[in-house]
Length: 587
Ligand code: PEP
Ligand code: MG
Image (tube, rainbow, N blue to C red):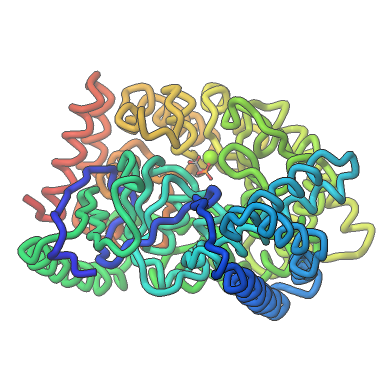
């Protein structure tokens, strides 16, 4: 549809991933589709049954295709799930009952199919047997596909977009975000969400322009509308006029030439004007991102979020599968370091379909997450620890625990690691005996006991995404309170300073791997506070490096000293912003 025929609307939101995208909207709906209900005239009833047959055939073809792709790309075991889906389509009871319902009521076939399939889903989900209960999920999935085909809906999976699209959704899970087809997803817009939700972090690492917190946009747009996603200023412009398109064309040209300059400068080392070398590392969620880490000249991986290996899998990856994954990253990065973080499942990253391991919680960010999960499921934890240890023989691997709350927890995790070392030694399996072990500082109690933790590990990595949410009691994924999520709150700055001081007093290096590290407005403040390493999405390295090369460390220290004296988060932010703009020559 021609965007000029419609009225332009500008919707403000939160800038979550830089870049500008323009394209047709695809509204991604996770919930059930709306099924119209109407009476089918007597003379059209044969056609209606034929329509049902065609939808079943189309569904069968789609599922067979997916099965083939999964078999090729993942493995036969995972592909077997789709045999169960194909069997649903052969189910005489389901199909026959739908036809009988149609003959009895004369209502359109989608209405009949939805009624019958819902009855079956309901019946399966009430069965005591866990295996049969799981079949309810298969049935729901297949029924959804059949309905999509009957209604002529576009395929709703994000990894199989029909064409290049701006994806608009109420919210998406981190695993759905990780499955986004990078070549087809031009931009991402979410009604809810925040900059530090994991779904958004993943989109950012794929360099997909993203705006979040645009309340109810999904209900105001339709498939086929056009939109500009401005991930710099955090606005979405629906059905832009010719003059807006022209203006954005100019902005995009400027941004492109600026980026080209950044990339050119990115070949140089990260040394400040007064000669201090700064270490910039990368955060990754999947092994394939190593190529990006190299492209952007990051000096190692400061955070490998291994849970994504689990989130996108129908089952727990085995020790061997994990080992091969970690080894590939270690080898590709050697001799540069790779910090592999142990599982941080839970919170906004529960494993889908594993409700036995991750029961629903009222307050998941305060719940059964990360190291808490691992210490209770030591079989799962040990498989991962052994896999990481084995990978350490192939590069400079370091291990890091998430969500440590105090020394006892750290000691318990280290004890499990020691058992794994013994097990491997007994099996004669090689690993690096000097592999460093670090802990994330992302819970206030860990920050307050940094001196004690420092006695039991080799480095700290501050997870500001969580540290801010827990210190300020601001849910990191809640867009209603996103304006209160203030990285420049004095409580944050004082805590960062105290953690750095405690670590340095004991000779430990400190990195920051939360999103603050890759934000050029905050990077000088962190460096000024004494942080040794900044770890960020690979694509952010050029910007931060450009800034590092344009600033003096002495000025960053003065900025931090001033920030520590100020009491207003907004005032501190303004100082950081002015520092950044002056060095980047932005008015
Ligand atoms: C953090 O909390 O800052 C962090 C890096 O971990 P994650 O975003 O994965 O929770
Ligand atoms: Mg965290």
